[in-house]
Image (cartoon, rainbow, N blue to C red; front, side, top):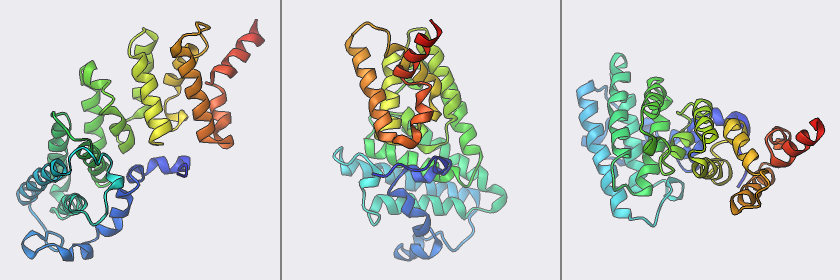
Length: 275
């Protein structure tokens, strides 16, 4: 698994290894396998037509993922020819075929339906991952998607604002202003709240998914670094030290200078210097 260069973090679709194949396959010529009645790739649609089509397709996404069960959790493990990928592609194509003056409104209509579905339970992991991938794709053709996502997250209650099933998806989609979220999370952690969530978020996004870098979550990492050198010898301290070591190993020598300012060992050395 190769670490993506930092500048690729500005390309939302690259957060989904398999979904990155879709931009090419999303071209109109790729829809020849669909039936004429469902092919929206060669016609201009009104906002009402697009809305009805996309809502129906979104319902189909839910049905397809439900039939897949919980054994498949990531879109990147789904074959590009799978029905799920074809339906996601069709939603995107439908959005691009709306009358230009109404396209943003059409996109935002389905985006709000997607966001509503994301917070409904029960929810299969593959459905959540697929919907976040679709949000990332739609965000590339409509700037309002990111605005709505950030407004939503800012106004969530704490239970959902710090939901480990959901927030990594928003980070992964690159629609969330991660630096603002990082600052807010760090503030809560400094008050002794959501410490475990902060550590779990770093593990998920920086180590496991590689959907963020240490530079995306500097304030959260700074709080965790202090906890990792509190001298308590607790299981938490040992676990955090191991986490920082793993981040350094995963990021490689090129990224270590950026980590130096937040790693527990570097912080300890700075304190010794100032004593």
